[in-house]
Image (cartoon, helix red, strand yellow):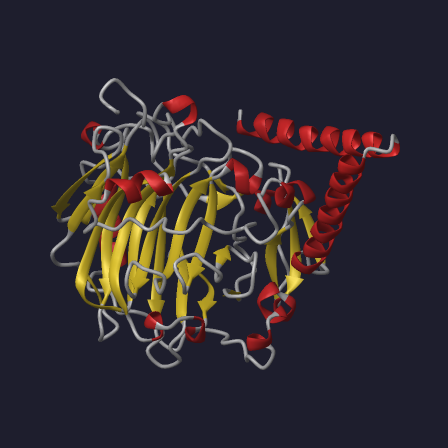
Length: 429
């Protein structure tokens, strides 16, 4: 449904352009100016695409229609920026966080637990079915012209809107209504944090409007919730506006000024430096969890290298993807002051009603395992570079009758929570 909406938007733009050109040939002054604007934007879009889509050593056609370009690691988009011109790529982290539990023992426990986690079922990315990228290259999802044209402007392409962070201490309804973003999260604050980890099950939530999205992620936050906010984010999302379809995709995001001028999704601007040749940012992940059936989850770890100071990201237990250089940030150049885990959706209030865009599985936390979405084994990295259980976990949601969150703890999943919901329903205003 999202893909159909995207096609209609693209077709509409072409028809509009043809109309403008036709009207211009008839001598309409206003139409001529508008046609010129359309041509200018298309030219600017082409230049932007040439900047984003680097020459490929190899290209792979994914079953979902994406093209994955295998680009030399030293030619990735970050190195277009003057700040990176003399940057030496850090080939690997200097240190990894020390776990406080044995992963193999944990996996054994989970396989026999009441949660019945099916650890043998691995999540991969669809494009990998048709090939792999060579060593010393990284896989980059090719940006299409229609991807850029769906954005309101070139400047806004690949960026979140200002003020999209859930602020647990805020109860200002005007702020909530203004930004249109709703959340169901668990969080910790009041200490110095040097990273976070979580395992989350993966779903394919239904999106009502093509300009809405649904995501599940962790946030590494520093600074105030004003214009100086630093944020590193990673998880999975469904975003028809960004990708042109309704597939569930791996994503990252960063900003050093509360989403104003800095930062972007994935590799759509300078910032994140990728070193891994197996995982593509923004590419579809598969399989996904089934309601009442098999559950599939992914693990994400983000931590600050205590020697070099860069923020690293790991996907699963084996894929170290790359890092955000510390010089991108002000507050996060030192440490984070808040960690959040959970879900986020956009509610455009189409036709005056709350959106029916789903968060997570689209079902409330009370339905439990196999039906509700979860984050399990949530942890933080402390100042000694140790992974440990967070203390003083809080929860936050703007409207629990639309999307809710419930914390709990046990020996197998450690600190965990179920979250999400259907959005519009008889109890959701």
